Image (cartoon, rainbow, N blue to C red; front, side):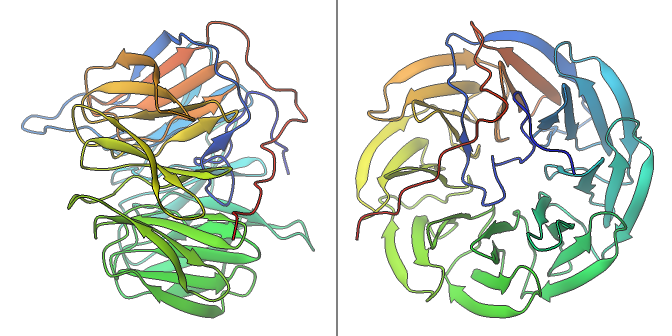
Amino acid sequence: MKAQQAGDWVHSRGDEAMQGRSAVDLQLPLELAWQHSMMERPKGQSEMLVSSAVVRGGKVYAGCKDGKFRCLKLETGEKIWEAEGKGAFDGAAAFAGELVVAGCQDGFIYAWNADTGKEAWKYETEAEVHAAANVWTDPATQVQKVLIGSYDYKVYCLDARTGKQDWAAETGYYINGGAAVGDGKVVFGGCDSVLHVHDVKTGKEERQIEVGAYIGNNVAIADGVIYVSHYGNRVGAYSLTEGAKVWEYGEREFEYYAAPTIWEKTVFCGGRDKRFHAIDRSTGAKKWEFRCRDRIDSSAVVCAGKGVIFGSDDGYLYVLDVNDGKELWQYEVGAPVKTSPAVAGDYVIVGADDGSLYCFKAAASTAAPASAAPAALPAPAK
């Protein structure tokens, strides 16, 4: 099993609990290092979605709408290898040992050798796969498991080495978001408007939590609390062990698609009300908000507890001060940015709806020591 090194971004949301955190202290301004076109615009098609990227060992991995999955050089954007499915690669990939794993709209989950692109295995579900992959390591055996949802209403747990199914958990409708892991549980939501909590090792269902509206993205887990955003125009916090609602936030009748981001005493989430929200993690009260020119579907990343970075459908990438929401930096990409940023040492990578990956380089070296990892979050005040 390969360990994360300085300059890696091995989880699309920072860790397996999908909290959206990085230890990197961004040195602003960021400068565009390269742009890589993943696909050409098909006739009559307005958007060309690119998946959120993951990074390991100086290589960037991402898929796109035209069925290509690519490995690129981090420093230059040069293509190293390319694999192809018979449908779009919407969801972010995940690493498992020597493999990189991603789901495809052709219904398959693919695993390739991360260095060569050679296919190691593929697993067929019964419908399209839009969700991001997540990888969990069994602490007792150190065996890695791939967790990923499908439009066949199921979340699958597969042995990462072989692709063999360990268990499958059935829900009531499509699953778009990744499955977050924390405190020995795996939590996922979907179009059945329910948070599903299962034992991550056995797949046994422990509880269902009704939230009342579609859940379009992953949840985040921190200190026994599940944080979720949904199409009922709200961001909510629920007890992992009891399922009880801790608080609910929402001031306007606009949906939330972007996933929540957790840092110390604050929950961050962009909304389709064109605003980026900072919410008190204990009470659910508004701390501050920042207004963009269009809706925000990009799931943010907090960097070293100082800046929070995200994209917007207005075509800009933003960095805000986590304490007061003051704008620290912006860059006009020129196309909607819906992906979650990958923060890999000196580099930040985002995909845009023009079919391209954009890579930005920090103004000065920001790579954390190899041993560095995001600090444990304090429990919210009761």
